Image (tube, rainbow, N blue to C red):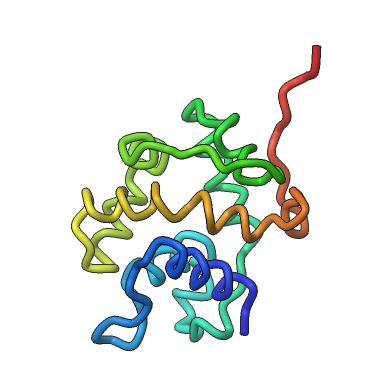
Length: 145
């Protein structure tokens, strides 16, 4: 089983999101995999064979950070409490990616950003055990006074 799949499934369970739809997997889970492992999804790999792609994770974190949500993102990566993010902030930070994810997942845009805002803190937290990003992913840390 893949670490990404484990993280997504745990977040779905924590937030009482159905994990299996009519196609055999959750559309929300598929959208998260598309966001965090786009090359694997495009290649048609199964959820079990899909692993987080450091470049995709870095891009997601950078978009959120550049949107002004760096402190929120760092709370997800850190070992403390995960700060929430508003659906509108996810929508603004992801920009055109949301429309593409909405189209490919079949989830209406408003519903999709609500689910991403609800699930991303938990998924990112699980992908960053002990407050460390996987492999080569890095996020800037503000200088300490």
